[in-house]
Image (tube, rainbow, N blue to C red; front, top):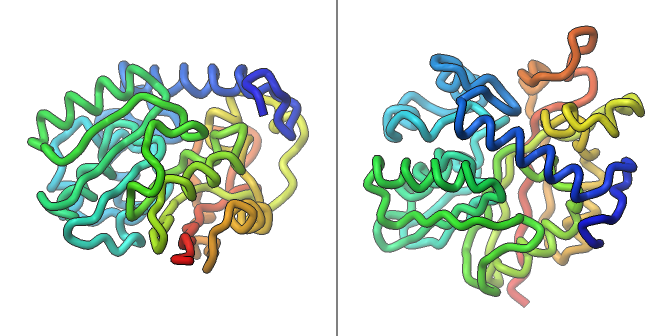
Length: 267
């Protein structure tokens, strides 16, 4: 699919990426929030609500947690010392820094984000966190600037729903994972039909709702990419979805937080 191709929702991919990139650029430079509220005290509250511990919050210097996630992928990834980790849509770097603590100095973490302002902020945060084993690269998650079979674990937090080419995201994740590597993603998934006007509304798409996909569709995409042991598990407490959406509608009527896991077969 080319950048000017139409998504299944009727919004061309280039236009969708531009809207998402602008919203995240605003979040990176103004702390105005994107999928959540990144005002001064809200990021920590949001992080607690979606599964981060007090130890997680205290382990990372302020500025990396922008309150943009919908779960804690580092909690489900079972990271081990020495592993190589890739974070898709790494934002300010919060999950990268948590992952770096778990894999230690023998391991490494690469964060990829398509928003220059966000990559710049993440690199500044890396210096503040003395994270020598963390690197941030500018790039699209559909076209990862990462070598084949070079990582052990792929993480992502409320980002895949923003992509206009989700099957390509999973093909790329499969490509860069070593055999036996695994995928651990937190994201929003669609649980009811979204009104048509929101499927093409760029604010709703960039707000992490309009581009969400159903669990069966995600499972099919992962299987088609080659993954095995695919699991999409809905968050039992995920009906309280804290997202900008519509004053007259509750986002939890349509989307819920979920953990998405899969493995790349060894043979």
